[in-house]
Amino acid sequence: MSWLGFAGVFGLFFMTHSVPVQPAIKSPIVAVLGPAGFAISYSAISVVMLALLIWSAGQAPFVPLWPQMPWHRHVVHLGMLGVCLTLAFAIARPNPFSFGGARNHTFDPERPGIVRLTRHPILTVIDLWAALHILPNGNLAHVLLFAVLGGFASAGGTLINQKKRREMGVDAWNRLNTTVAKSSFFYPKTPLIAFTLRLAAGVLAFALLLWLHPVVIGISAI
Image (cartoon, rainbow, N blue to C red; front, side, top):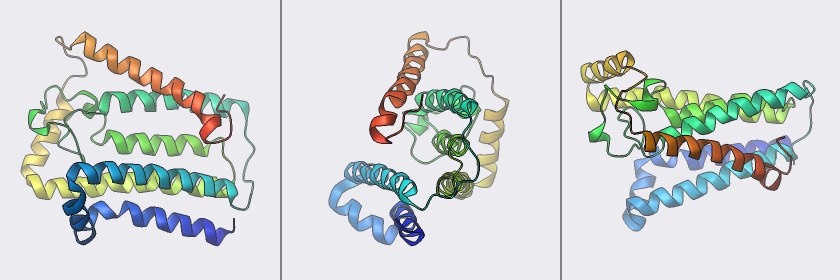
């Protein structure tokens, strides 16, 4: 694949990911599929486009920047365990600061969970995933791939903050953000079963990623 083809896949990736913020495009689709249908369809397309983008980086001209060292993979393994745990503790949790979120009206700023550490857990997961994968992939195409995706996630957090401030009002957003920032990391009545299940899910997701990496990506992560 040429650099032009790689750039074309990148362009298509960003076009598909701009749909949720384009009411003129999104509204007719939601009218036909419904909110749930749109969410499922968009998620499926996002996964396919990400897989296509990663594949295209592997097909682009190889321009080495630095060699892979054995310790690179150890750093990625440790970081990806943190990524999987962050994701496990973020999914299906109320979060009025970010996009999506389940039952946001039940969000307790005194007990924010993972939101205490990051207001946008999913974007943080993408950002960390991208940053970690730059280290062992020292060639131009992959560095461009992961740097752009990480930057995309970081910029997304800033844009969402601006949107949420408009929706909630600057004063209300600031009060909520300050309360969360001052909340405790530990709660005396944290449900142990729920915590354990999310912890186990994160570890299981990490093991599953290690197992699937050679199947999906074509290269062992170990």
